[in-house]
Length: 189
Image (cartoon, rainbow, N blue to C red; front, side, top):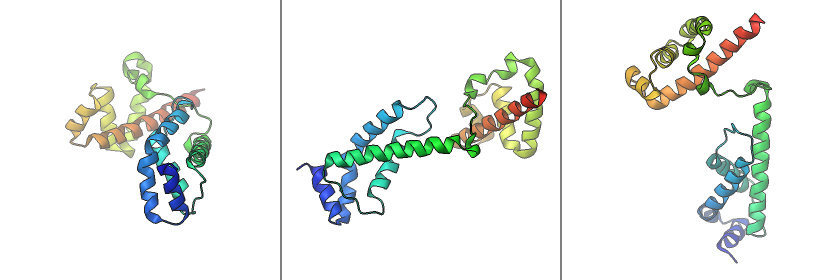
């Protein structure tokens, strides 16, 4: 009987400490399984293997008392839980709240927008004006990034903000500007 099977039997008998012993034994295998599952997903998947493992583990040893016959049964249950989580994640992304049928566009590739398309500078400026009314600090970050060409690290220093805050502002700004600029394009049609 493997250690995993022994611990699974202890969990089934109600031994609360056994649950704590299980994760270190199965973590790497679950992570490998999660990485394999995520590798089969389409590019642009935002779910990371570590987060998937943690979600799976919570579902497997959460509130309901689990009953597994063996190590193989446990990993089969883990694979099924991963599948369900990935399906739920995909359904959530298809929802209207998360963009529905819109497709993901990497805006990092579109960063030289101001240099390449002079006619878009006017649209960008108008969007930045609206952003300034809504979120002035975020608009300032966009100006530094687009027009001054500063990196996010340099912007963090200039604005005296943490890098994490700057990354958060930048993600917000990209999404907000994308929405504003694509809406103005659609309105022109």
